[in-house]
Image (spheres, one colour):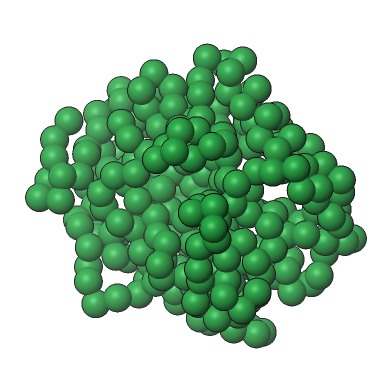
Length: 278
């Protein structure tokens, strides 16, 4: 593997296939964890479900122990944006829950996040459902932009353009927390911004693997960290959503490492056909 000026790690096809195995395991672990979400379950119970799926496949969470983080997933509820620590707090119908998880398999990392409404659409505030839906779609717009991008900054521009043009009440894109490179470590260069700037960012070329993760809020962009030194909350108490996928760029195209179908079902409507890693 080679390193560019920002020490970006570029992978071989064989290494990206190993990352895809990690990503598929993570996808299954998130599927199982989110299928258990219901009113009354605790986020600590969800953490155990996730850890058990990874353990059964010989993997572990790359979150557990990261800079002292005490759990296998992050569970952020309502005004919590990211890095919420699982606890014995029971979830309630109508809560908006973001689950962020990661796995390491044979030394290769994956990272993905999803947002759900506890109790399903019947229990959802329509504005919360819209928040989650637009956050998820903005993620796919960013991934689609990567497929044709010459520079990483085009991802954030696509996310920003989509969110800014969405009809209805304006949503805020957090700027303090961004995506990142991923590979032999969970967090690596380059930063992947979720908003438009004058910087083009690093050049996109085969072997680049990125975790793209927009975080949107219904209110202001100001946040603060709770006394646990991890949980990030909106200063105004507005609700937040978080969606994330790990994506590989190779000679023949892109492949979403943490989507069961490589991203095909969500990217096809955007004119992008993901290609399996050769």
